[in-house]
Image 1 (cartoon, helix red, strand yellow):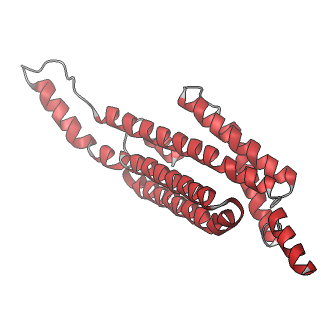
Image 2 (cartoon, helix red, strand yellow):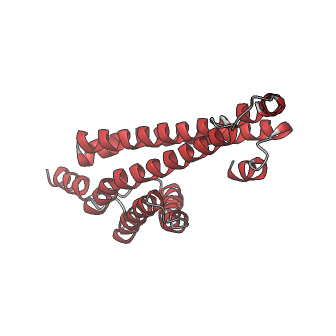
Length: 219
C-alpha cells in the first residue's frame, strides 16, 4: 500500500493501479480480522490464569487496534476518489483562470485532502501500535509470572512491546524513522512465538496448573 501510494502520490493519478490499491486494502482489513480473532483465541487462557479483567482488557486492546488499523486503511482508500476528481478540478481551475474577475485561488485543493488522508492513516497506525504495545505488556508479564513460556521468551515479549510503544510515541512526536526499527524485536517475537507454539503444541503447563495437577495426584 505504501509503495503504491508513493508511486502515484505526486500526480494523484492511480488509473489502472486503483484495483491494486483496493486489493492491498482488503489484505490490511483481513489483518484487522485476524487481530480480533487472536484476542478471542487467547481469551480463555488469559481468563484462567489472569482473571476476567486481563482477558477482557487484552481483547479490548486487540479490538481497538483492529478498528484503528481499519480506519487508517479507509483513509488510504480515499485517495482513489480524490484522484478521480483530478479532471473536474483541472477544468474548474482553467475556467477560473480564464475569468477576468478571478482572484487568488485560495480554498482547499485535492492535494490538501490527500495529505490529510495520509496523515490520518499515519496517526491511526501509530496509535494502533501504541495501544498494542501497552495492552500486550500485562499479557507478557502474566506469561512470565505463570511460567506459561520460558522466562527468556516472555522477557523478550516484554522488551519487544515496550520498544514498539516507545517507537510509536517517538513517531507521534515527530522523531521520524524510529518506529520501524523499534518494532522489529516485537515482530520477531510474535513470529518466534507462533512457530514455538506450533512445534510445542501450545503453551507450557504453567505454575498454577502444575500445582493443581500435583495436588490431584497426591489425592
